[in-house]
Length: 181
Image (cartoon, rainbow, N blue to C red; front, side, top):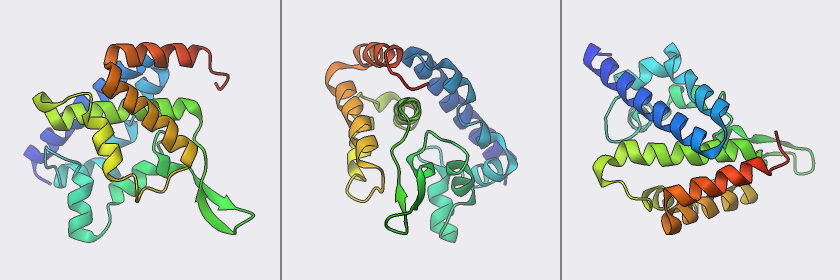
């Protein structure tokens, strides 16, 4: 891990985290924003991220290309409930691991995370369509609970069609009236 890679990685994850915090405040879930992605600063995640920093996409992709897996990602997804990969459990009926429906608040945080990531990686080329396009590219192969997928997709479509201001206003009102949490 180079010093330069560590500085660049720190700046990228911090810039991303601050965007997520701002989005979470707009969505009415400020605490989730403040707690977002703190595990990225742990040695397990930070060191691999700094070593594989690319600047235009996740360093986890480079780790996967080099080793076949990303230890940082495995650590991250197991500690952060806004990732759909966290929400798997043993199904007593099928005797297999299966995706389970995510609680509303974590789907909302996932939306904020995806929009922020698109802004960071797309930079000045970002449009409100980017998060939806990214979601749709992997939709056919993603293993996620169908209701969670549909809910997230509906918000990404709204962002594309109605813009950020109206979408966050809708989400904030939805959050106020949602029975969970």
